[in-house]
Image (cartoon, rainbow, N blue to C red):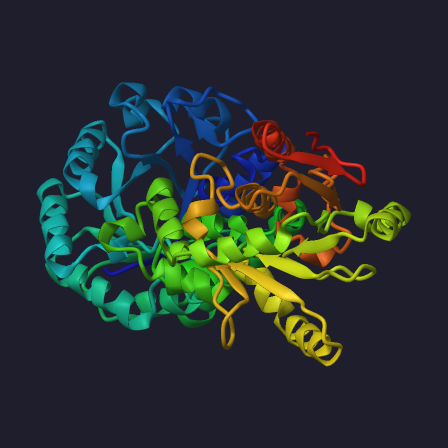
Length: 543
C-alpha cells in the first residue's frame, strides 16, 4: 500500500541555528512531544566523528554516544533515524542496528561523491539499518545524471531515496519533474523522500504537490518545528501535519506540536531568527550558494543590482560549490573597469600643489569634536575632501567616491551641490574610481580602481587607504584628517548609523575591526617617508 509519511528533522537540521546545542531537557522534551504527536519518522541528530559527545547537543561522534541520549526514551510508533554527511563518520563508528536505538540512518551526499556514498549506504544496510540515500542539491543533476543515481540506488535497494532542494530553488514544475523521473525508474518498495528549504516560500506548496502526485511509491516529506533550520528555514511541520490531517486522513497531535514550539523552539527563534530574508531570495533567484551573497554583501560596496550582476557571472558547478577565492577574483574583475588615469592624476597633481588638504570621514568624532574641525578650517583654510559622503557642517571642495552603494545614495545631493556651485561660480569636484558608474555624463576625475586597491588586504578597497595613496602619488606631502576614528569594540563607528551597512553579526566581529585598524596603521607607517598624516579628531589610527 502506498503510504504518505511525515519526517521531523528539527533536532538535526534545526541544529544549524544553535550548533546543535538544544540542551538536554529540550532534547528530551522535543523528542517526547514528537512521539506523542504521532510523527512517523523522527530524525534525532547528526553522526559526525569530528565532534565529541555532549549531552546537550544532537551531534554525536558515534552511535554509542547517541544511545546515551536516546536509548532510554520510548519511541512509541515513530521510526527513529540519524543522519550522516557522507565522509564525516567512519563506518567503524557505527554499531549494528540491533545494538542501537536507531531504526535507520539517512546519508546525504553531493553529486560528485554519489558512487562512494551509495557504497557506504550498502554497508549501513548490511548492519541492519533502514537506509535513506539523500541526494543534496538535486537541482545540480541533469536528467541523465539523476537516472544514473537511481540505477546505483536500485542496486542496493535502500529503504528510501530522497531529493534535497538544498537552496530552496525549486518551483512546482521542477519538483514534479524530478519526482516523476525517480518514481518511474526507482525499484518498487523504495520510498521517495523530499526535503525542502523556504528561500522562495515554496516549501509548503511543493511538499503538498509531492504528496498529491500520482505515484507508485510511498512518499515522505521532511519538516521541522516552526520551520527551524538554516538559511530561510524548512517546511513547518505544524502546517504539514494540519494539511495531512485535513486531506489525507492523518491524525497528528497538533497540541503536542504547538506545545513544544512554544516551550522549546521559540526561545531559539527569539535569539537567532530564521525564515525568509532578502539575502536568501537573492541566492535562490541566482541559483547559487548563499555564501556568495554573504561575501558580496559584507563588502558593503555594491548595490543589490550589482550583486545580482556579479552572481550571474558564476559558471557551472561553481554556482553551488562555494569558492571564496573565485568570487573574489570575479569581484575585482567586475569592479575593475580599467581605464587610463594618467591625465586625471596629472591634473590633480597640479590642482593640489601647495594646498593644505583636510580629509573628512564619517566617523562619530567629526560631529562629537566639531569645534576642533571648525578651528582647523578657520585657521588653515584647507582644501576639503570628503570620502563617500557629504559632510553637514563643513563645505567640501571635493568628494572622493569609491563605493557604488554610497554613490547611489549621494547622487541627488551631488547634483544639487554642483548646480549650487555653478550658480555661485565655485568649483566643486567629484573624484571617482572606475568601478563607480555615473548616472549620467562623466565625473570630473576618474581613477583606475584596479591600480589603487590592495589585493593582499582583507578589505581590498578601503576608501581611506585608496585616497591616501592617490594623494601620495600626486606629491601631496601633508594631509590632515577628521572623522577617521577607526573601528571601536562597541560597533558604533559612524555619526550617522544609516551609513553603516554591516549587519549586527559583523558589528560584533571585534577581531575583524581590530584587524582593519592594524591594517590602516601599517599603511600609514609605509607612507610616512613620503607624506605626513595627522589627525584633527581623535582616532584609533596613528601615523
